Amino acid sequence: MESKVEDRQRERRAGIRHEVAIFSGKGGVGKSTFTANLALALSVKGYRVGVLDADLHGPSIPKILGMRGRRMEGGEEGGAPVEGPTGIKVVSLDFLLPDDRTPLIWRGPIKAMAIKQLLEEIQWGELDLLLIDLPPGTGDEPLSVMQELPEMDGVLLLTSPSELSALVVGRAVSFARKMGVRILGIVENMSSFTCPKCGERVRIFGEGGGRKVAEEFGVPFLGEVPLDPDLSGDSDRGEPFLLKRPESPAARAFLELAGRLEEELGLRKG
Ligand code: ADP
Image 1 (cartoon, protein in one colour):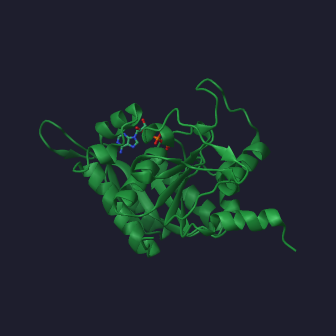
Image 2 (cartoon, helix red, strand yellow):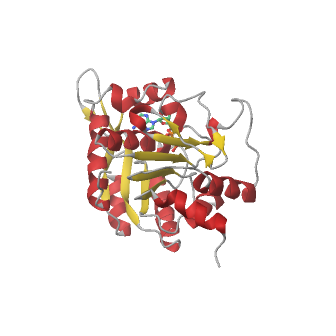
Image 3 (cartoon, helix red, strand yellow):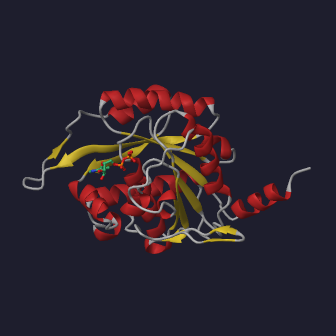
């Protein structure tokens, strides 16, 4: 017989139609920046979107969406997500830590428990899609999130164009496959840079690393996001990039990728 707690947890997540995790073989490829802006793009398209910031060591989604300093309220029925720009519902450890200087020195099992609670003790309400920003790499933390999400629709693998990252992504592909998780596709971040003076598009790290690795592993290649100093500057300042510069090539790339995800998942609006 299943416990009441499990029933309650299932009920809480019953309003979530799709769950997709964003995954990268290593840190620093722009996973949080990507997740936050993809969420904005889907929300602008009219979907009800939630973001779970499961990167416990560097919970940066609130900063990128301009939500630093907000607090998550807990109640008898569990915590409620914090509403961000365009109504995105966000859950992050950042809303629970007392201040910036508090280091997180939890060990593996505690981290797994924290992620489980962030997933299950939250009243998400009705969502068309929940995006989960996974901790980087192929270690215990992404593993425990994936184990908690057996019905997840799949993962998006984010890579940057250097060969090294492509190799690391290869490892991540094998990891996801071993976990039995569907890989929705690979996205290449920081793929090219357009010179603001002359308009020339430069591929600093060379051509097509993401596409190559996608072909190598038989995974769909979903597209790329260019390198844009404004994306990093705005995100650091807590100004939601996609809303501020909707006409920029990077914003258009996020909207296109949101379109690809709509197709892959057969998304419907609430
Ligand atoms: P991760 O979550 O993978 O560790 P972040 O999202 O924190 O990576 O991004 C790492 C750094 O790269 C941040 O300073 C971010 O602003 C920057 N960044 C990410 N994507 C881009 C991009 N397409 N163009 C410019 N800067 C980017």
